[in-house]
Amino acid sequence: MKIITASEHQSLASPSMLTLANDVDPRTVDLSGVNRIDLVFPKFTDGRAYSQAFLLRRRHGFAGELRATGDVLIDQLVQMQRTGFDVAVLKAGLDASAAQRQLERFAGFYQGSAVGTQPHFAVGATPPSR
Image 1 (cartoon, helix red, strand yellow):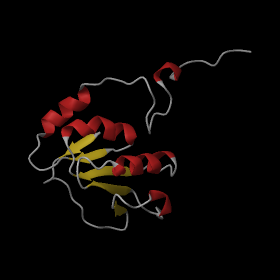
Image 2 (cartoon, helix red, strand yellow):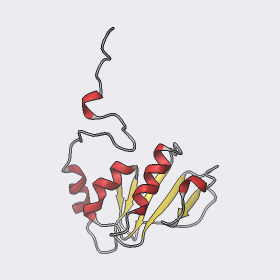
Image 3 (cartoon, one colour):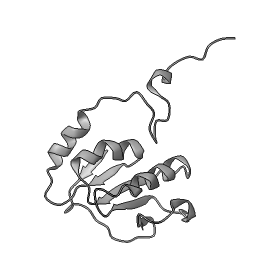
Image 4 (cartoon, helix red, strand yellow):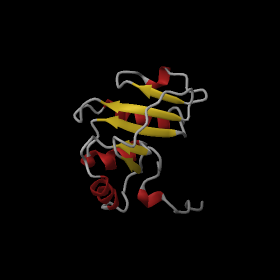
């Protein structure tokens, strides 16, 4: 996951970029020609953008960039990555190097995620012969 600061984030509208409010059902949006979607966390306690990211990756098969914007805190980054976000725009005043250390703290997970759907025990396993 790429981490950028609020000052590095550019939310300039373009035909290939879309910003979704957290009350929009992503299954109802036409994603033709879209290669970046900004999902908004208006407050860190509002997790609807996690569900949007998961739906976009798993149900829509969206392969473009998902960017977390808004009230993005360091302790949310691992969950954001696991639900399908590629980029997180940190809330103003937060240290990007501390955020990177948070992501490096966890080397792997037992269960699957929005992107890597197989559980750890099934990765690389050969199917049983009959």
